Length: 422
Image (cartoon, rainbow, N blue to C red; front, top):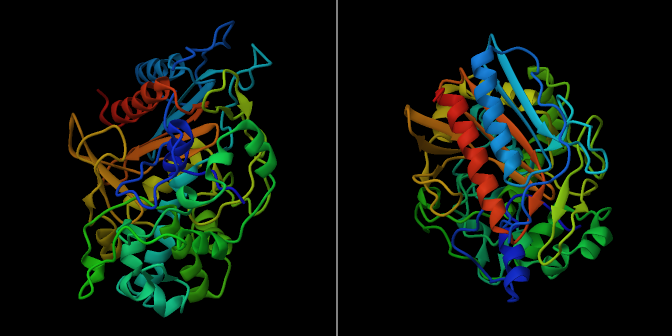
């Protein structure tokens, strides 16, 4: 399997710059490196209409922000702002470039990428609350001998290190021998139906020395931070060991079913996204034409979930309002370390599968994660008390193009403004 989730930036950069992927990077960004701009898509655009619920002023503001994201070169954008009593939605752009009049569907399914990590962290913390797992447990305890070799040592890495991205483990995406090939149209076509077991993903990461080993005396207190999908591959395997069930079953039984998320799923080995959806186009480096990258196999605890903007918002509000975690575990989730240079926003701090950043107009900031898959970017945020959530799906990803930076910045502004009303 060639995985296509958030955190693919390091491997993409290797292809873009023409150098080998480094053995370790201290802070691997979660975004694919962005779009020389080819500019926004031309031709007739579908009508920008009002979705379910929301007052006119709120919708107009959200619509302006959705339009701003589309103007950066996306093919389609869908966004929702929700509270317990209200839902405001907006959309812009096309479901497919071959149909100039076909809008992005309301409630379109999309891959949420590394927003999956928040879900996996919730599963682990629920097990902690039940006394079946401890944040101080080592990887070695649950996966004996699985993290060894080339200086890697599972005896020095705890569950907290995995969830907080402080383990020092390499990202299996960055060190994979197939990394460069992934970021070409032909490489994508060869790999889109290929699956790799999480055990093999973990083994791939261990072919390089770690960035660091956490403190020997108190590894769970480690504050050095580096984004790595491998951390959540290992966390998923630990969840399976503790429960005796597949990770996907735990997602369903503990989150999807209790919250009534009827449009959220774990696809397993299937490369398909349910209808309705929009085409996930990717502009690979040094290519002038988009590739339809909607089909993509693989993934698990680090980034495989498919959902909708509405379901994702319901999950975020439930999490922050205390419906999914006990107070002690929710407080632990919010214990953060600095995550510099992760996204294009200052002051970001990373907790257990969720991050925090300051936002102008908000005294307490917002909680978020975000995810990138080939052809799709998920951006979202939620207030600390869970009263308000903003979620968005942006179709169209331009690797190696500065326009992607502008698109990412526009989605961050959309979320910030939606949560603060500014």
